[in-house]
Image (cartoon, rainbow, N blue to C red):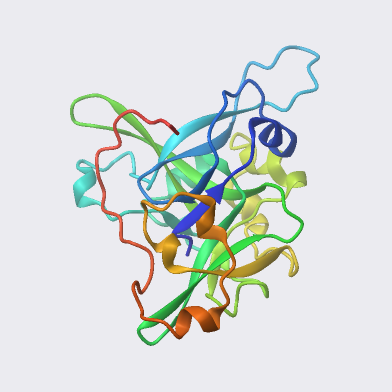
Length: 257
């Protein structure tokens, strides 16, 4: 699964990595948690004739997908992840898988290796740095009062060799050459992009042991990514067994600030 991730890139890095332009400045985010706003990159229409720029734009969405057919978000589970193997058939995700696939820019993600009552947090980042794009799904949910909330989930797949020793699942990573196909929901059906949702090649990521600071949503400084050798963590008292659990809530106005 993917319960926490980070995006500390700049607008310039986002433009270079995913071809998004005309995006406002935003702060680095070291500990993104469920129900918080996240950046999505979606296919956009209306590109100027003759332009060489990709037809993509960035929007904000609440992390935790609510199906369009849901009557009350409080009655729905917090769908922060969608299993890639079943997303095309599962009621909560199949419409989004067909019509609203997105890219979710990230600088890496956090995962926990559990042993009994203890757990060790890891910061899993691209070995060569930079920005990666998780495969995601988006739905716009209409509240009973009439307002609309854009919501999203991260697709997951089996862990590759970089992560398998920590957890058996990891986010789907869409490679740059496949961005256009992934976002093209007009001509590319779910079966046409199923092969893109495989574990990434071994060696793409490195896993760095970090302290239990990342478990708390309130900890949002670069300290959450500071290397702490597992022995020094495991020898001390266990403060947290994993990340704080988030509950569904009213997203309200989305902002990264």
